[in-house]
Length: 582
Image (cartoon, rainbow, N blue to C red; front, top):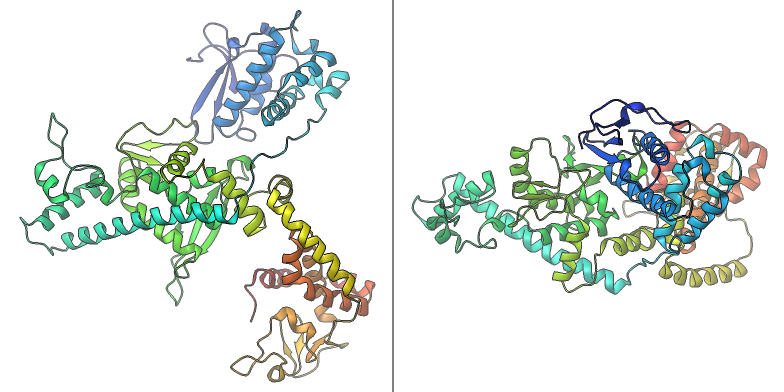
């Protein structure tokens, strides 16, 4: 629809901005939603099976959310539109459908809620539509408002983590397929480079192969004969055929290989499919340091966090084989030719995962991002994941279950979601986590019963620094060369967190702010980590700080916490992340 015409007046309960709500030449109420990329999608509310005032009221509520600060993606508005249509169809089935939203009754709202399916679909419909209706000023107080405010129980999660054997199976399959593709692209890239350097005599098969690879790298395809569309004969001979495997796959990934790369990114970083699908090209820091190891800035987009909060950047270093950064290096190598062609055809596309297809148009239409440029597809979608799993003899897309496995069992920390979402949606509903918790809780109870409360602080307390003592991250050291935990070079080999367990350590009031802040940080970690993990890494340090607090006294300890500086916070953060350790 064109959407041309005068702007419609808003009903009394509406809060829409006028530019998003218009009337077309037929007088129909149309909402225009402009997504974060500036593309516009229109929703014709005259299509709803409801009275005109109901259409206008729903349109106003819908339009109020079609703003950059609320709904930045067409996928969001399209989902809400379908749920509103279902609500309008419910109203139309009533013996006396309401003429406007102010004629809704508590009984009618209750009847609609009870008509929704019991699973996740019903929960999503109730949450979405009731939230929209509560924005109407006429429904913000009274019995109908109370009914709309009722919470619907979140259905139990159906997606469970993989067993270790299952997780290993699909990651091994992805690694095998991607590494074979990377080796193929790298080998042909080396041949192309030698051709460009003039290493082959013209007229030989190697020279023709190099020339064909050069054309392929610049255009995405080999020259074809007019009319037949077949690859020209000299290249068929040089490439050993004209199938995709013989020709374009020499420099470009297939869809299944690109999906295998996505699976490896999931297994390494715990990113979900929407993040992997839209990954931008990571950039290496200009200064790679003395070791020459590149550190990549990886921009991540998490649309569901909302406008203004959906972008963040991670730094990932290539520390050699098996490191997370090495996978980024390999991804850049495997996709470099496809990305170069895409950039030439559509400057500014800047997507990491680019692969070639022999069937243009095979990527499903996406509401919010570019999916295809000529012969090249961008990103990985759920249908690609299902195709890959089928080709590998696996069941279903690995991304939902795989992410739950990585986040809840391997990383045990949030990955682009809040702590509350981590606990509620990933940890608590998972059968493997609950099963493991039984053993952990039992072991913790047994350990607690066998441990008597005792002083664990070996450091000496002082009123002031002593001349000649060496400052560490957590205390002063009176004898660095006489450590109970000597290193091979004769120094101290202990972690800074172990300083308080050393009789050479000296603690004075100048240390109290940093140690009080460290004590608080370790307590916070205890509330979010698995008990066994926290006990293994942090319990001893926490108990020494508990003992120190008892000796210092609650008042001075609280005063120290109030004097924490930004340097103290920085040092504690580096201690907890392992960036400041021996």
